[in-house]
Image 1 (cartoon, rainbow, N blue to C red):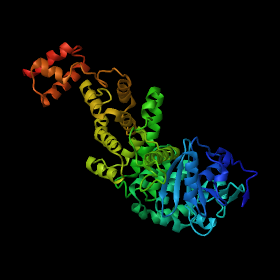
Image 2: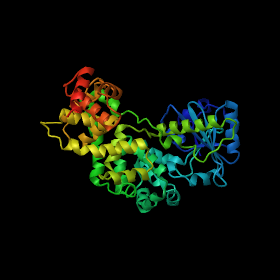
Image 3: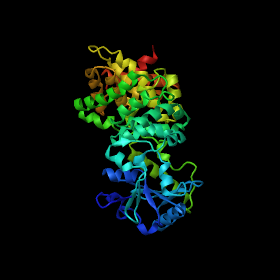
Image 4: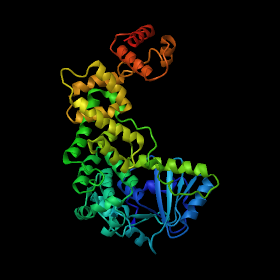
Amino acid sequence: MYATSSISLSVLSPQTWPFGLQWLPQPAYLVGGVVRDALLGRHADYLDLDFVMPEKAVETAQAIAHHHKAGFVLLDAERQIARVVFEQATADFAQQMGSSLEIDLQRRDFTVNAIAYNPHTEELIDPLEGFVDLKQSSIRMVASENLREDPLRLLRAYRQAAQLGFSLDAETRAVIRQFSPYLSQVAAERIQSELNYLFGSVQGTPWLTAAWQDGLLQAWFPQATAQSLAQIAAIDRSAISLVAACPSFKAELYASLRHTTKASRKGTKNSSSATGNKSANSNSGVEAGAAKAKLAGDHRTWITVAKLASLLSPDLAQAEVELLTLKYSRAEIQAALTIIKFLPQLQAVSVTAGLSCREQYFLFQSVGPVFPALMVRALAVGVPISVLLGLIERFLTPDDPVAHPMPLVSGQDLMTHLKLAAGPQIGQLLAEIQLARAEGLITTPANALELAAKMTKL
């Protein structure tokens, strides 16, 4: 045991918690990432607490949730794990595994996550010398059988190394290589969550490469190559170049994808509520999952999608199979496939000729909101930045008639004035009107109707 007098553990102080220490039975221990991060001096706006206790874990969570009118989710009835959700904090309560805390800690993944803190006595319990590994910035396994028991821990080692800026212990990495085939047994949603962190940060890029080199990605991205991984690093550099050349494009590149992810529903699957307000508790679980995902770095941006597309098969049908296997959302699948489909068009562009106005118009219409991801991916594969900046300028101009055309007339206008029936012809006429306006050939609704009339007589 280590006295905490010389170590700043303010984040572990009950004074920072949304409930008082008196609610915890003795003994009760804080464990996992919150202890690790406190020892490293890492701070987060959202407090993520994990408690282990020999008994009454669920009962304790229920009492705290009831008293503070907080959300409650029973995560695992068999293993007695529950979650209490506050506005700026989440507290998980788990029944101790084994007959002692030491046995519980010995069943964890890495030594840096196997340090416990007793808030009643203000002592650290560190039987596996995780504090030593923290000082050495090293991710070291507790035991090889623990990695085999939950193969997701194989990939998690690389994610945590990226997250913390740590190295990976050589013996641990050798075991991971040996066990790499077992990763294919893990649920795709769990794999995706770890990958998304690695895709979502510059620090994750070298660890993605290391994971591929060690055989962890082949089951999920069978056609990825060393060049594919090099392209991900190129995307990081390209994003910097685009922002330097066009600072206002940064907000677009790093904008979040607006969809509900699997990670944001973490904690609600196969869970039940023990309070009266089932709907409120379900929402609390969703909010907690979303907050935890954000805290862990699982933040989907257009750069994330561009990196994902780099590892996929160039064949659209096969790429879609890979994305579906990993349980990506429909929005992410469509975005990645759009990048794969339209990247060759940009690669074929002549530096001098560029894209014609017509080609630009149809590119913008086809790509839609995926445009930022396509731009950073294109620069990464060698499309000249001079070609891309003209397109980006149009994209950033809200009233640009090529990138953001506003209709001069509606389909109903065409049917009324030209006595046309509803059908495919209306859509074709509207497209030609939009294109003519983009090319500067027409400017008014009257011009549009006149053009449509001429086209119907051809």
